[in-house]
Image (tube, rainbow, N blue to C red; front, side):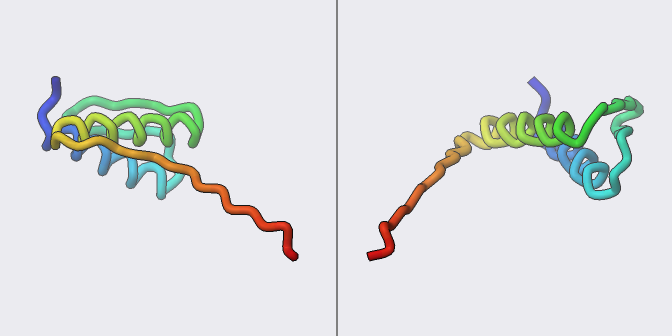
Length: 71
């Protein structure tokens, strides 16, 4: 498994790349080309999960729906 510092470095590179709109990321002398923004988002989410696991925590995602009849 990759160490926490490397995971954070990769995530920072992807986040910067996502904001700039460029489809190529380089870190540690390696270059990765992404095809779409959705693919970059999935890679960031995967890195977030890996970082959370390395830090000993989980990412909890919840969706709450509230409705009313308007009466």
